[in-house]
Length: 125
View 1 (spheres, rainbow, N blue to C red):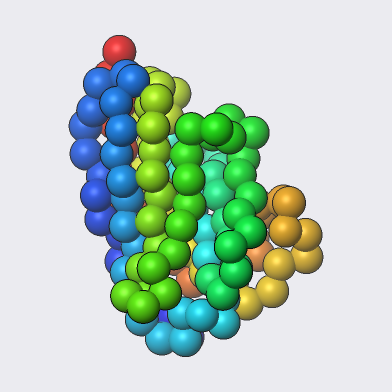
View 2: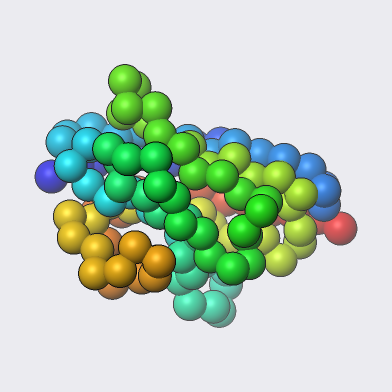
């Protein structure tokens, strides 16, 4: 099992940047790790994912070129650097872990079994 705790959410103006952190405990390096977000009234959306022991990362179309997922395996921490933020990025952001991913290019919430509590990101125009 793995336990996840997110931090770093805040309110920011459009065009600004934030870095989210996800502190993991347990066998972190054996999991796929992902960032997801959910705005009120909308489905949970995959933002980015990567296997904790690799450097290959995959992104949702809406964040490509603006967001970067990266691990610090020594600290068992996953980061999401978010640049050029837009009002439509406003959501609760969640960190999650999965043992098996069928397709690395698809960031699919039902494949993830371990979830953090979330951290709120609000982007104002």
